[in-house]
Image (cartoon, rainbow, N blue to C red; front, side, top):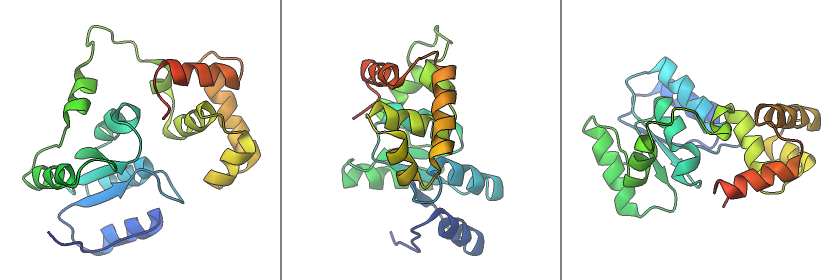
Amino acid sequence: MEVGGEASTAEEAIRLVRTQEWDIVLLDIAMPDKSGVEVLKQIKREKPALPVLMLSMHPESRYAVQVLRSGASGYVQKEALATDLVSAINTILRGHKYISYGVAELLTTDPVDSEKPLHETLSQREYEIFYKLGQGQGVTQIADELCLSVKTVSTYRSRVLQKMNMANNADIIYYAIKNNLID
């Protein structure tokens, strides 16, 4: 196995995907300039057959199902063993999806209940704001971290509160803790 290239930004990753041929792309879900899920969708639009393995520091319950539905070939947590990562890469290179036991459980839990949990109705960016609010971060801190204006983050916060039928940040924190969505 050989690393053929490395990118530190979404723009650089997309440029590399466009200009070279790859067997597989390992893509971090948290990129400094753009959401990894957005980059995944762009890669899949431009090169639908190119397998993409998503890496994340977040638990599988947070993003795994979403990225698989967005076209990823697999999802591995950064804290996973090196052998798990190699296994995921080899599985994908053989033309299969890599689905860990935990992700398989998420994909098959309670198929009778088709109503989505409230947090699954949020867009990628809304969920990102929701998650950070759930950790107790303020709008200004989130804006600085995501390189967005305070007004933009406030707008996303308002959408989250409206979609989830909540009144304030305390409701978000309570929901996030109750549903084991924060670390």
